[in-house]
Image (tube, rainbow, N blue to C red):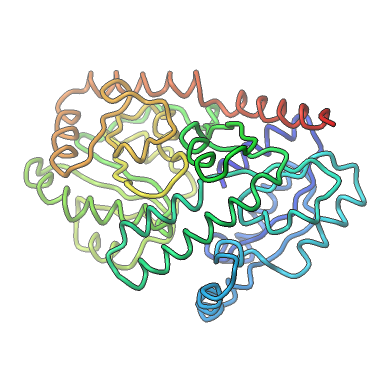
Length: 389
């Protein structure tokens, strides 16, 4: 969402945007939340259509769709977004306005490809979904889920092979994802529009740093984030707590699972905040940002945000995929529990090292991951497409 909103904000500086979107109950659980989200979105363009997912109606609807998708050619990721009226709304919008380019924001939206004929069509890949799903399948221990994820991944791969070359342009978040996409879909027209940071929003606030404090920030309804925190709590935190009795940990993010709330309930050194309106004060006061994510795909916006805030970061290499960081210069890589404990302890004990790591990270995002410059590149690609015959 952060990527999409910031790209839309930048594109709207040079183009008129007409927006067709979904609201999602898990992200906007109340009418007030939906209203607030749509008001923010409307600042980037004209909202033409707003739809709701059928699978959002109840858990029963979601489970029914997941089961049905076992027996359909298209995977769940595509079936999930199929909603009556969306395709016709796209067609009506094109017919009623002077539309040059139609931007499909994920592979899921590609199911509406045919409704945008006569326009240049762009497909945005936040991740390479088949790669991410097959990686998830390999890591899954429960056999039923493993098999489900494998069949979803294989179906997604087939879908990508069939649809991506039909678009005038595919855009990815990084050279890593471009390579993955081209391995699956040869000859695909691809360019990179990296994830970025709003540097006017994310910057060091100057709040007093809490000694020996750690933070993780990220939505806790996304499985790689939950798995990462579970790993940290079970494999890293007990020994770190023993070695550094004054260490504290804060986990910031919407929809924390009940087991995580219960873990923190009787502890004074471990806090689970749930959703917060502004994550910046929490980031600014932490001594170390940890990101033990070793699954998923794309580039992690949470890493870019932490770099922009000038934080000393300890992260799994997978969490930094697609971001041009250097181990030991602007981030410390860690894979094993021992790696995390060693790097966090080192940073706790050396304020100058924390400062130099944070300063290098801030400079990196200023040089390469500023959404203003990224938006200009996307606008240029749109312009070039419009002028292609």
